[in-house]
Amino acid sequence: MRSVSNTKFGFTKLLVDNLEASAAFYKSVCGLVETGRVDAAIAGRKIREILFAPSHDGGATLVLLKFLEAPKPTNDEVILGFMTDDIEAFVERAKASGGAVAQPAYTAADLGLKVAFVTDVEGHLIEVVQPL
Image (cartoon, rainbow, N blue to C red; front, side, top):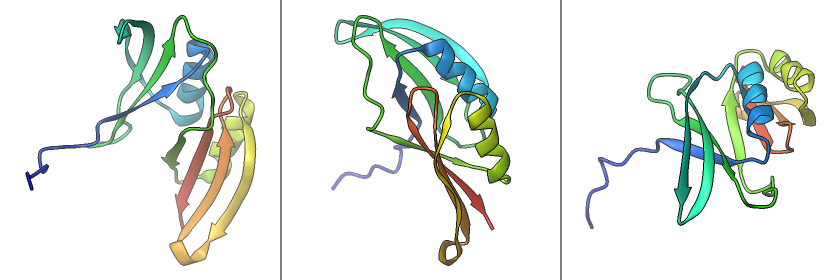
């Protein structure tokens, strides 16, 4: 078997319908910093993307992607995960920015974590984790 030691997970592309509203949500709630925008095509389908910097050294990049001539994408195919040191504040920012609480914060003592689930402005599920 060939070694894959030079392979690294680098980014996630979240399919969205409203790029600007989604970008505003992730900037205000998660503190993500936009690094660029791309207009291109994938397999002949026109796209527009907004790229965000990794939030820590070695972290992955989040990219919001819209297929320009496609119907609204579904929002139940991926769960984004964010770590925080203040889960209650994260949940409040999500609500204030147009998201919703899918499951209030609870303590998973066996894992040493507090966990909550919120949705973004388009209903994409986000798992928020705070170490105890």
